[in-house]
Amino acid sequence: MLSPSAKQQPAASNTRTTHRLLALVVAMALGTSAALWWTLRQAQDLAQPHQQNDLWYIASVHNELARVSLLARQLRAREASAQDLVDRLDVLYSTLDTSGRGPRVSTQLREALPDTAQGLDGLRTQVERWSSQASGSANEPGSAAARRTQATATPTQALRVAEDITRQSDALLERLRQAVATVHLFSTQQTDQARQQLHQRFIVLSVVLSALLVGTTLLIARLVQDARAAKAASRQLAQTNRELEDRVARRTRKLEESRALLGFILDTSPSDVLLAEVESGRVHFINHRLTERLGLKTAPQTLFLPDLLHDPGTRQRFMQTLDQYGQVDAMEAQIGTHAPRWSSLSARLIDVEGQLAHLLWGFDISTHKALEAQLRELATRDALSGLLNRRAFMERSTALFDHCRRHGQPCTVLMIDIDHFKRINDRYGHQMGDTAIRACAEAIGQALREADLLGRLGGEEFAALLPHASADSARQVAERIRGAIAQLGLASPAGHPVTFTISIGMASSERHHTGIEPLMADADAALYRAKAAGRNRVLTHDAAHPEL
Image 1: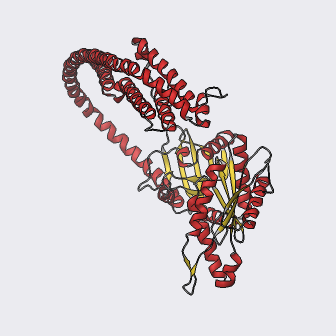
Image 2 (image 1 turned 120 degrees about the vertical axis):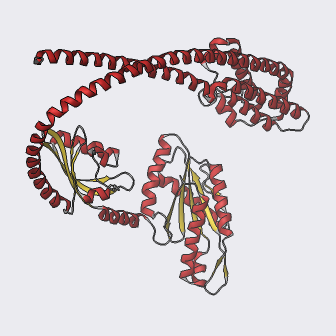
Image 3 (image 1 turned 180 degrees about the horizontal axis):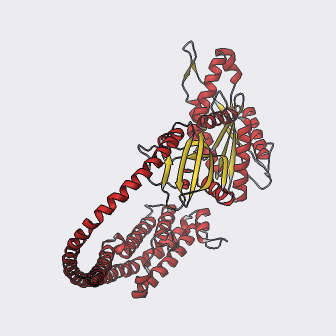
């Protein structure tokens, strides 16, 4: 019979051999993964749609220049307007724009074909000069883009530019056609080189895979041998394991009975309860109520406390307080991801089985929060029209006006009043007057943008604040509103058709407007003049002649 030391030596040798084979297979698997990643990376690069970006970009420039050339000839033949040429030059300039908003010639192409890149930069400078000359803004201060936006094309200047374009366009188009051919040849060479590299990488991958197959076969054979030896050893341990299992089962039964009693108490609690480890997220306990509120069919095995909190800001504040003080008491927060609900949450940091854990409990306050939201809505909305009331409109318009002024953006106020509203009430009754106010509010709201602010100041008077809107664009909106109201088809309770009009006074923000109130006062003055001038019209406040 062999001694224990003699038995241990072959076992240790077998273990070392198995470990070496396993290390070899792992190394070959890592090598295979690296080779496969390397090959797939190259294949993915070849499959990217941006491979032809440079070719597409230069072709787009060629096409736009051809359109500019054609439009220049049409302008000389009096078949196009000067503004058309300016607009088409702006399109060509935008196509050539390399500031980050438009396509850009790649760094690789600039290094490989510097003449082509320099030619495109020179063409961009030439197009910018044409655009400035055609729009009559070459000597005006400011950026080129701003001059083109503010200037107006003149026929004489545009005609001279058109003649210059006609003289140079053929040569420029020919250079662009040569650039397209050069870039196409360059892209084709790059693609062929990448394909050759990919073929070489596939060969390397095949060799590595073959080595992995051989190593795996040797490892399987070794594992089969070790499995037979382990089976014999497991029979010797079986008896000992059964004795240990009996002892553990008795102790586990007592512990489970205690946990079951505590779980029953917490599961029937009206509050949400969670006990989970901090590091691993292992859930020691979660009651049925919280599981349902999270939209889960069964209790999760792992759950981290921060994942319960819906709002990132609230999550950060909650966890900072818990980590700093070890507890959080009655903090209102939303829990859940798909359908978050408000809860009043409390938490503690406790030790469970030698691990730091979070104990969380809370109460559902969603109904209370919904009532608060309804009260806030009732406090800011006009009950008849559904628009912002005077107080809410003044608060929000003040903030919006300050924002526009701080960023140097224009804004315009429209003061709107229903003409002869008293006649509607006297002739058809107050119910018809309320209907007219609601219809007017709906028509105005449909004509405005989502960013615009609309409120009912009282009676038949409305106010609208149009941020980032100049006087011209705001006047177009005001005329659209006036036309929409004039075309409203309402009927009285007796079936008689009811039509009415509105008057609108508007004022755009100027330097002397230090707040929303002066701006509204100017718009109100313009509204008064519109009423005095015969109603059903839009008048703009004139700061130089306020009496007009």
